[in-house]
Image (cartoon, rainbow, N blue to C red; front, side, top):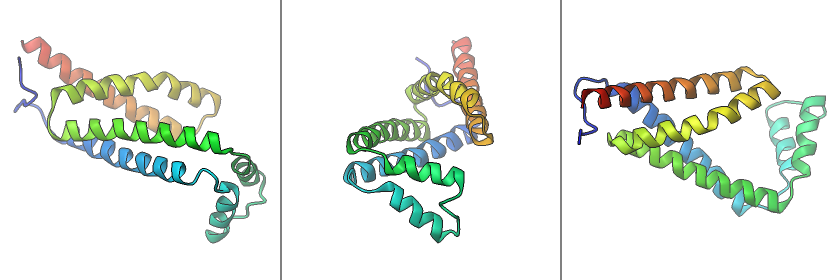
Amino acid sequence: MTSARDPRRSRRVLRLIAVERTLRGLVLAGAGVYLVGHVNADYGRLAERVMRAVELDPHRPFLHHVVLRLHNLRAHQLLAAGIVAIAYGALELVEGVGLWLDQLWAEYLTAIATSLLIPLELYELARAPSIWKAGGLAINVAIVAYLVYLLRRRTMRR
């Protein structure tokens, strides 16, 4: 069996992906823990305070719509979102640590997990286009393409 350590390939890109996954995992897990611990909070009121603190008018149409949606969130919705965020954050952390430690299984896991979300990202981009969604999709497609290239190159050398 070929080791995940391949001196001919650059580790920089995998390390960059590992850092990105680890940071995203920490943010998601932290947000999930916060949501689970604060299921009865009024996130609409919190959003209004944050908007005023950064000098945004929460009564502008788009911002008002966001505030209203946040006011209407229920405890069971917040609990479900928190649990999903914790689970997804844990997956991202496992991917990040595995890639940092140069583990072959982490390359497969990252390629598979990331590629499974691309159809959802395409749907979201088509439904409500934004530069952020397009950028996130482009990054994830590039990550999958790069990992598939590395994994294919390794299997062809066998």
